[in-house]
Figure 1 (cartoon, rainbow, N blue to C red):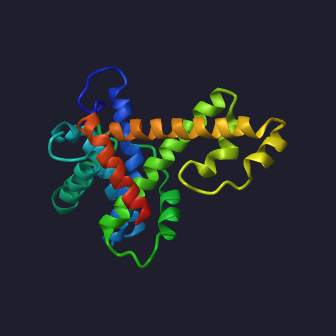
Figure 2: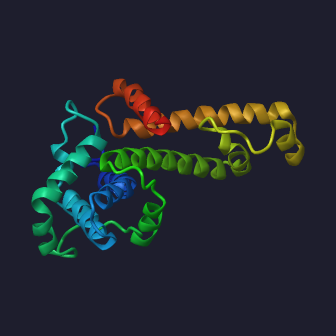
Length: 225
């Protein structure tokens, strides 16, 4: 399920912290939608992750019983119901692992969430999907930049998830001093690499490769819903 969470290999803890960082805002939004103030939500989310990492709760994740996103939300619900007061008393800094996060940015993002959506779990699912896609886009951008193809990413990123290109391939070709065929090939390769990175990101949070397609379908349903 989580190679990072079930491994003592070098970098495993860093990989797990990176994964948790991706889930920080979705869980923050869930806590806010449960009625907590921005300050309370910040403390609760931070305390949850500090405890989650310090106590190695990820080791309790059962690969057979569910996805990491579901496991994490269930763990948060348990934390909110039973453990947050104790965790808060222990105070961050006393051996707990703290994630470096920007609470102000999180609240700015929350301020534009649709007010008509009152279900905290739906908010969590949508923010999970958005965070996953953002991570994949960032990885693709880094790859393109490292390979001196940053301009391809900037010109063609709008079409990666079914969106419309701001400019036609012909216009891009003219602007970049190349042929339309070259741009079409670049767009095809970029979409192909995007799909590969998306599947790899999903694979980090499921029990087996066989579950990647199912989780991908769920992601599409959440984004489309």
